[in-house]
Structures are given as structure tokens and as C-alpha cells.
Image (cartoon, rainbow, N blue to C red; front, side, top):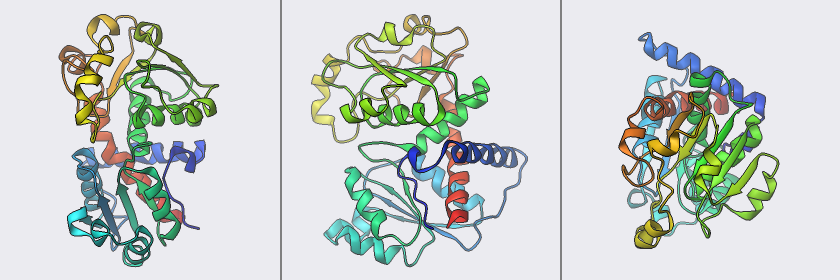
Length: 301
């Protein structure tokens, strides 16, 4: 059976925890100077029509460390960028490679691709969610706090794909999340309803952050929203995570950001580079978590 990773919901909680356990093992291997060559003879295709730094580097490095190969295709290098139907591209590419990671805009395009793919497909980011980032985030939370359940999380900023991903994570890992967003920038209503037992919504950052264990934010202006910059800068005034706001979280709270971060906007420099920040471990953990995910999906197939 082909297993895809379009959302954290595609794996059970036990499966997600097993992936995190394996990611811990793989990280220790790298630190010890050796890697498991479990992907020898395997090829990962990267189909990206959105720019990427951490996602591309982590996937390509991860496959290389495991003895596999990667093939990167941007819209300029693939027929899908010239009008070939998604279904046709899925049929052809999946007949030649072992696993595919797609970074795109419309979530529906990813769903259509998986319906015609013969191999596992990984969601490397859509406008709806970013589950690979959450694997790394939860790996980081467990490293720093010793657990992924029974925690309180504050998400402050835009109710975007990262907010959606954290809401789904709250369901899968059994923790509570308080979401602070300006009016008009709320997460999708259907998802909020589905996560109502774990997620609460407010327009007050101070209300969301009080006594939490994890503080999360994201850029206010995602790719494709550049023409909304002025409107968004005004709307998000007061939502900057600074030292004064962080003082209201638990004293042992950690700060997370998927990056890139725009210092002085969604987060101040002293928080991003401060003692509570775990963003650099979080970024590195993309490598280890995705290696574990690739192993899981290929072994399941």
C-alpha cells in the first residue's frame, strides 16, 4: 500500500512518534560521523514551484547522507510548468523514481498528484499546511521539553499554513494551542471547528502567551502576498514577539519560527537570538525528521 504524507493526519500518533524516534537516532548517527545507507539505489524527485532554502537543502542532503539520489525540477525545468496536466506528470515521474516531494501553492494540486502517483508523495509545503516543518518542530519540542503532549502552545501572527499545521499537530500529539491573530486573518473556519477541543482563538497576544511552554510565530507576509505588505504591516501591529511579551510565557518556554524570520517585524532580534530561542535546532531538525519520514514511507510501500 502506498502511504503519502500530505498532512500529519496521514500517520497515526504512534507512527508519528516512531518517526520522531528514528529521527533522533539518525541525528545521533550524523553527530557521530556516520550515516545509515538505507536509501542506496533510491531516487527522490523534488517538484518545487515555490522557492525554498531549508526544504530543498534538507531533502537533498538527507537523501545524499542515506546513499540515495535527488532530482530537482522547477517549473522552468518540467513540462508541468508549460501546461502538462498534473495527472500526466504524476503518472510519468512516479514510474521512474521511488518517492516525490512537492512544494506548491494550491493544496488541491497536491491532492490531484497523489491520486495518480505510483509512489509515496510528501507535502513539502502548500498554501494550506506544512507538515514536514511540524515533524521538525515536534522533534525540537521533545528535545527541549522532554515531551510533545501535555504542553501549552501559543501561536501568534497570521492564521496561515503554519498555523493550520500547528492546529493539526495539537490534535495528533494531544496538546493545547492558543492562537492570537488580528481580525480578518483567522485560520480556516472548518479546521478550527475540527480542532476545537485543542485550539482556542483570540485577538490578544498577551492572552495567548500567558504561561505557555512553546511560543511560535511566522512571517506576516508569505510568498505571493508581497502586494499586501502595507495592509499586513498595519494589521499585525502589536503582534511582534519581543522580550516583554515573552516574559509572560513560562520561564522555561522555548521560541520557534520556521524561518525565514524578518527581525523587528514578527519577532525581535533579541528573542530570535536569545536563550529561549530553539530556531536553529529546529531548522537543523528538518534534515533528520525528513530522513526518518522518507525511510518510513518507502518501507511502508
